Length: 198
Image (cartoon, rainbow, N blue to C red; front, top):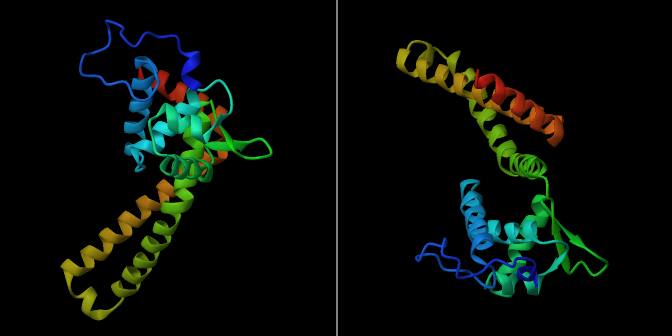
């Protein structure tokens, strides 16, 4: 069992009375898993996707579907769907010839970069194409007489162009982050943090 590696007492006096231990996880690990679930929601994912991810992150090695579901008190079908979501994001991979066990990436920076890269590919890139298409229409409209002579409408076209420029810069930033890789990015962020503290 995953929980077998965590010899933490369920009745620790430091555990708030309002906290309910989920499944078979001791309180500290359980609270970590719940926090990861809330963090996943911040990235626009379901909380339980994050909880499954956290359980695999804490595990000592490959873990099977049934074990993850049991430790999180989760239905098998739901747990399986969440595992497939994590696999498709690239932060969890199947293990073994039967592909019935799963392991998670342990490096937080790699997790972050993989998630950002995949979410950008799935969601930001299609949105970027749409934003650029609208901007192209706005640019074309600016040359039309009825828009040129309408100061308010012309100003709106300029604001659309300004926003599109911002989105393009964000896209470039994401591309730069992705190309750096987890190690160099972590070093860059640590340096930026030190400079910001001065």
